[in-house]
Length: 90
Image (cartoon, rainbow, N blue to C red; front, top):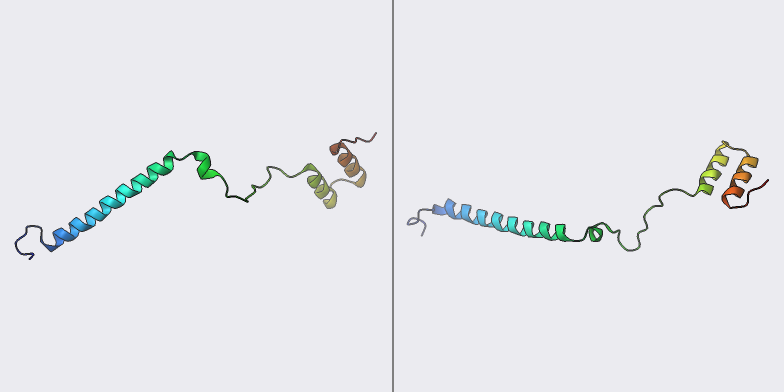
């Protein structure tokens, strides 16, 4: 069967491997083009139920931490909390 062809066994093996590589490249190219044409927000939206972390911590939380570390006293803490809540003390 193989003695009258010019390709030989290895020619057919090479041809089969090349065909697999060709179709693999074509399919990969199609997938990459389809993904690049998708809307950017579709690819970067977080999954449902996922809340991104807040951009910054609340000011009252930072103030409470500074008070707990002893960086500010009780009087300064009370004044600052009142200012943050919109009730400045005289």
